[in-house]
Image (cartoon, rainbow, N blue to C red; front, side, top):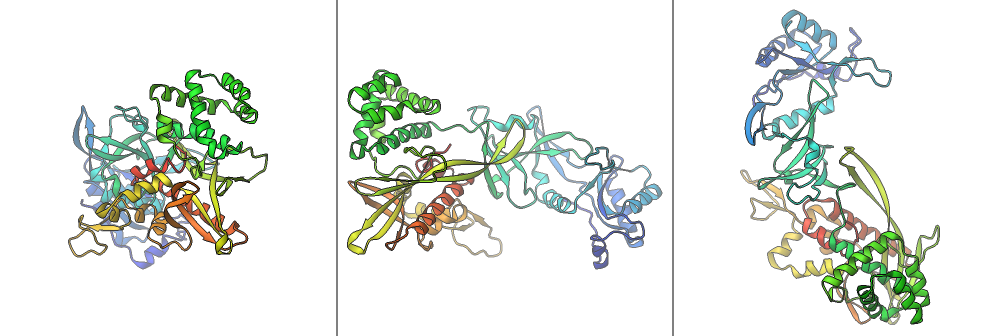
Length: 522
């Protein structure tokens, strides 16, 4: 892409950071509009006079940048920045030059007034200008200007499911927020671009989304609980209540019986009456205290069980330690209570409040925010009395790690590998070979990678860890007898970090699905 740029001398670069004492005006990037097809003419004139003036430092002219414009379903090549030249200069020097050598040109004017600031010429901050130049040279020729408004790309038109919202972390698009949308067989990043000479915006897309370093943002309006997560939350609510009421090894039979009763007659009033008649008064009182949201989840589960008999028994046949992060504690935790202890037959369960902060985006309002939600971490503790009272703390990652253990050979190696070279593996590159990231834990879930590869100083993966009569795949940590608080903090913070890493990357979508068995999230 032909670009007209000048080399600045060291003394001129120094002036970029200081006011021009002669004119008492800072150097800025100004935008000059030219007559049609005269961008190169103006940039050439400016380049000729750079040596004669100290107050025009640099010229940038993206005259031949083209994009595809969707018109009637067809891609048409069109200039993206036709009619504009960018100049790093003082205002007085640039205006003097325009008036003398190119009177047909005009410097773009910003008429907006805010914060007591008077209207003036439109300028581009240095950091934004460098990012724009980087973007223009690397991506502008791949941009497609879209026919529909930006908001139309919030959902997949075929499935009505929300498209993922992401924020670019680094590179020329750093800070940009947009949707990952499918176009034919290609996934592209869709974001908004502002016109240079007005306050209008248009939607554009760039290809090869996987080349960008992005993080997922929670869609406050579009993300919905998956069907599996809805059912998981419903079962977990009942299991937590049953365990806290002391049913222990009878938890599963009671769970199945309650579900069968609700399938026969989906009335919680009748269920509570039946429980009281059978002598389960404490359980009946807890069921009466359920909020409307939890009751709706349970009724959805009951309807599914009615249409698919045996579903609950087939999918929930372990009632030991609950998933690591749940939205409900199970036990009654009073105001200001951050942690509770529940004793099981073969282990002690610690239930702790965990505050998870996420980036959330509101598509209709086109704004993002940071929100913090409360979850409950469940950590089991077993004591080895024959080994001096040494304790093992563990978190339930059974289904997630079960899927990992089932991978083998090249598939498993890929999960803990880092980069690949032309698809052949390896971490080094030679001339003509391109190194790229692959969808691995090492690249996109580094905390989990450390645990799986043995690089974490404390937390380990344990396969088929015995918890009473059950065997679970867990993340575990061992500590000496005494205060277990440091070990508990370490295990919880490590597990939360893994959850957040997997949930915020676009590259581990399949593992995000398995993560729902660990973190009863969306």
